[in-house]
Length: 345
Ligand SMILES: Cc1cc2nc3c(=O)[nH]c(=O)nc-3n(C[C@H](O)[C@H](O)[C@H](O)COP(=O)(O)OP(=O)(O)OC[C@H]3O[C@@H](n4cnc5c(N)ncnc54)[C@H](O)[C@@H]3O)c2cc1C
Image 1 (cartoon, helix red, strand yellow):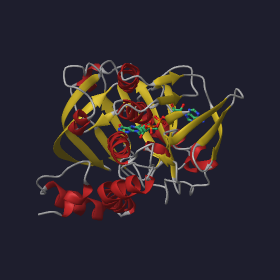
Image 2 (cartoon, rainbow, N blue to C red):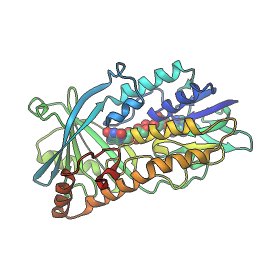
Image 3 (cartoon, protein in one colour):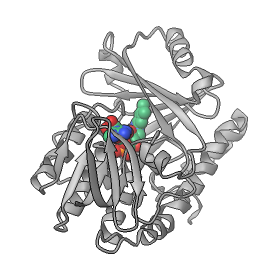
Image 4 (cartoon, rainbow, N blue to C red):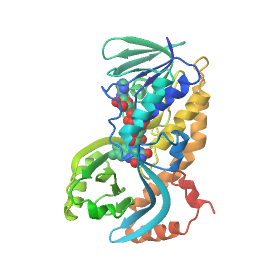
């Protein structure tokens, strides 16, 4: 019987597992893939990431940006502000090493199929037929969470298909623009396409509901720019939180919970923040999971609400978006993780 069983070895699951292990809980982490670190993800984050990683051990930072450029059809608006570009594969490996060092029992190629919550423990059935017991279970198993499905937690209301591809040819000239760019246009209704200069290539991406065929739209957009991309990867992005994310002995964190910035689809910072709260407020011996739900709601739901509103504004006509951007440009102290700062003086 483990104190804590974490399902999913992405950045959030690995970080959460380590936090519990550091509190002397016995922790088992189950990951269905053979290897850690295979998530298609740009890895663009704010400096808040330093709450979760140590300075000096951060060789996975690929680039540092001081501004971003937002394109509205043919016009652009520059916004100052610092952002860091992480190599996502290396970030997950960093969290993996930290979790292992803290004593987490990490098992790869272990897919969780069923979960049954009993009065005093939770039983987990793996694809291999093995059974495991834990006092509490954390579902950090991504947007299409098996843990959430098994516990009959509410469904994710909206999923986008995020897509990234890499430009390897003719990048030299492009590297001079060392900042991320966001392209709002009719091609990407309700979202945008992006361009991010990485160490050896330029990343291009977008995220749209799967039925809107984001791949076709991105290729058409790049064809017009005469840009070729290779190695296209995709994954689902939940855009709003589930209405409930805890049961008596189980809880969700990260993409499984929908802890994402709705305006950009960025989930690393919110997921890690929520994992930190879970490790503080949930005691495996006396699991008051509602305390975690209360805390994360208090800290992040308001920002998700404002982020959702900002995303809705992407549907506005171009001239209104232009007015909005001009208004935002004059705002001081904008915090990319806290859209509520748009309305603070
Ligand atoms: C194209 C794209 C670009 C993005 N760019 C950014 C960005 O720039 N900045 C940012 O902050 N966020 C970005 N995101 C979002 C970010 O990737 C996620 O928010 C983040 O990965 C969430 O981490 P997680 O650990 O919750 O989930 P995941 O990273 O999805 O990890 C879930 C893990 O659970 C495992 N798993 C699933 N089911 C089971 C099971 N049944 N049993 C065992 N294991 C299981 C999976 O194999 C996986 O390893 C992007 C996403 C996409 C798709």
